[in-house]
Image (cartoon, rainbow, N blue to C red; front, side, top):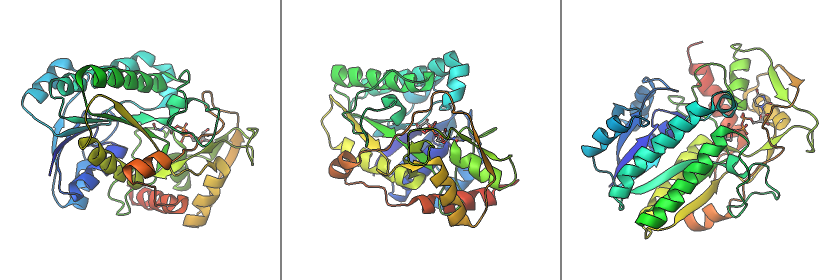
Length: 336
Ligand code: WQD
């Protein structure tokens, strides 16, 4: 089996991917600087995987520390999650996002360009498409002007990887996530936003748990079936399994090109339908009210899933109801 570095491996998608890699028998090394997670996530990973992965508290934006880390290590593949990811926060603090997200990737690429056999998987986002002209969104859709500094750091990252792959013959894949939600069915790991949740589903579960006030539904006049915005909500375990499929595919490729895959369910769900799905799945009523639209939101986004299915042999298996049940079970297990 392979030796895999998971950067941001104590984060939401990183931790779920780490447990799936370990279930496949891979040796996983996690680096994380705990800027948006807690070390206790490691306990959840260990309980699920049956053993504790190696982990290093490392800030990948620190060039010297990162170089020293890589000097003592060799990897068959790197899955790079480590980045700041709150769209709204990036608008308020753009330089924090550019400095962290771009530098961290730069320092990871310093290792990969010196070790071109190391496969590199980059955590990208459907936000690179902006409001796509056609739905569902395929990988051929053009990248539009990013709606936020966060989205711009993902576009910059993809450009860096494309150019480096071509110049140095690297094995690189960018995975464009739609909306990750839910939690591991064990409820031992899940989404743990530090501070008020920016995203819909963790706000729903915290509101339903009485930790937040009523959910504000941002906008009721979008040109959609019920007037609320539409997204493609994908269970985080499905997303984690997609990373395994993408890594297995990439390791078999020749270097030189950046491979791109949209990761979603292919199904669009409006905010109101997500609320309904939560109430139906959990039997818990949610208090909510309409509010003005949120700046930077697109009307609708959901994935064309054919490329991931045909090339990676991967499709999302879990439903919106599964995600709601797992998200609620995780929330109910958290200390209030
Ligand atoms: C979803 C919908 C909101 C909160 C996220 C990530 C981004 C990328 C894609 C990975 C929107 C509405 C939300 C609330 C609401 N993922 N909403 N009330 O903005 O699609 O982007 O997924 O890279 O990084 O940020 O997700 O969950 O914030 O919003 O009405 O309190 O829910 O307006 O329509 P978004 P989100």
